Length: 426
Image (cartoon, rainbow, N blue to C red; front, top):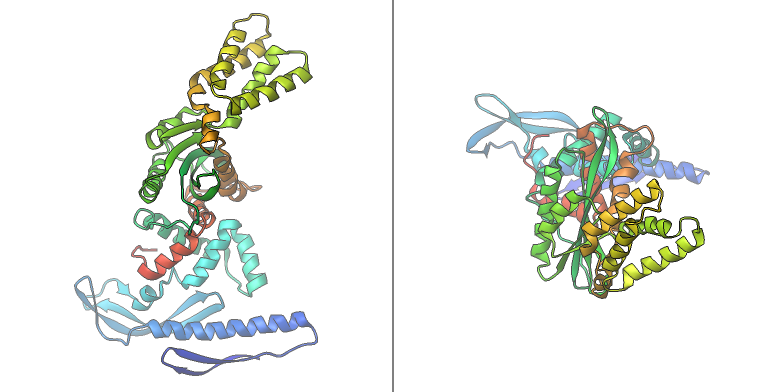
């Protein structure tokens, strides 16, 4: 059983595959997979050798380099390890060597691009040990955990370095984009050195004229004092989106954190306070109005939330009602404190609560996309039981995960890498 190379002519490779069948289908399938992996190793070896030079002198950055002869090197592929003899070049005076084959093949560390793509994609969703188990169990590919981590960090480094220069195109959308909602939020993750810190997510969501979300761009960033790097990355994405959709209305949507609005006010035409954060404060008013009547609290809260969402001027009317109510000295200390917090919140944000107008224009009024991103981009991967992170490792995972979760970007990244290569040392 196995595979063998029958012939190679130009760009065509002919391989014969032999499989020993069994009365057990599972055993036969495992034999098929093993033979196909062997065929894959033969074909990949031929593909790598095809991309090597013929040994002639080459010129790099104005300097002539000559081959030192063919030297063996092991490469990791989706089908297993292959060892090939390839030309290694060096200047006449010595110094750093160069391998044209590795540049032409887009080798990452010692991995072929497809294997690097597979490994890093899997690591975006699960731990290195989970990836190791999956590769061994489902692909017959035993791989060390340390290698999985190295490859994925290398891919993440390319993503980060190329972020400024590589522009990603949104998927083909049938509907015209009428509005773009921009949000940012934070959630805590556990770092080895500094304990629990706030990591950040940013979302840029495209909506049609009927308020249906068509596409979302995700950005994730590890904890950072001042959030300077994260905000610069988000600004770049906003600038690219505005260049692509100049006719759209840009809407900032977030909770009441002042730092959110300091950023969003600079980049959006409309500002919308998340409806669910606003409505949550009405609970304190309901308790102040009906301290001992739970049913009446619920009824008033339901009516007031409906009023806030559907009626023009509702936020101002509710603010005036709770302000008057707060002047009473009949309430307990706890009720007074909760009511004061609601008054302050509405006083600061009622100009961002014209939900009837927003809904008539089909703007989103909830920051659920951004809050969900905190879970999907960060929590589901970086906050599993027992996980603690070093900054470098967490940054790599977030770079991978944001790219994988943003529709079509993962494939676009690999197409660009395949087309342009990368000039960074890994």
